[in-house]
Length: 183
Image 1 (tube, rainbow, N blue to C red):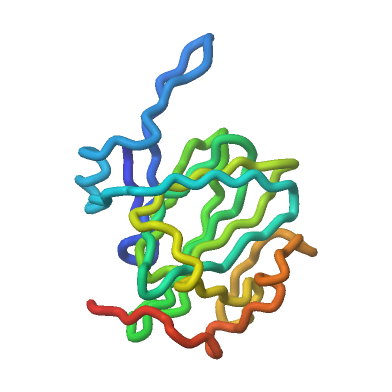
Image 2: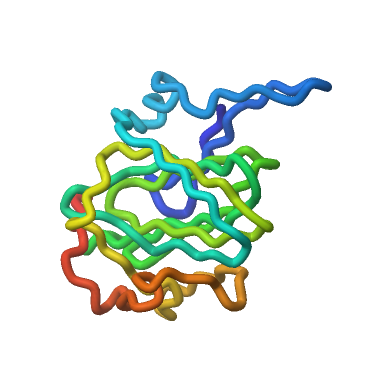
């Protein structure tokens, strides 16, 4: 396994090692001891799986105060996965990391607590799975406008398919209840 640092401290691209031959491949998608070496200690308590069609954009979402860190993987298809630092007072507040995750490249993205997360489906369909270190709590959920110009995210989708909630989300500057950065 290889961990690649991104331009925002704490956000990692993880490349699990694949063992392949003529039959296909084998990969450990999670190994607690190895991930703990990256300070991804968990415990991870919930696994989520979503299937979406081309052009679907899910996000940007986070929970506060019961935040979640996530390890995001794609089992089928291809997505543009995005993590946005929304921790008030952070030196990287409002900046994002965007990475293509696919079944082909086998990469994962670690999204720490205090970051909004979203993805856009670039393939015909995509199955996205993610491990969370806290349980989903709908009363703590916050949505941020996916196309907020202040964030400058190029989603690579001209007309995304959005949920009602995502279509009506506020820009980051108007969102209240964001997490605080503790350096």
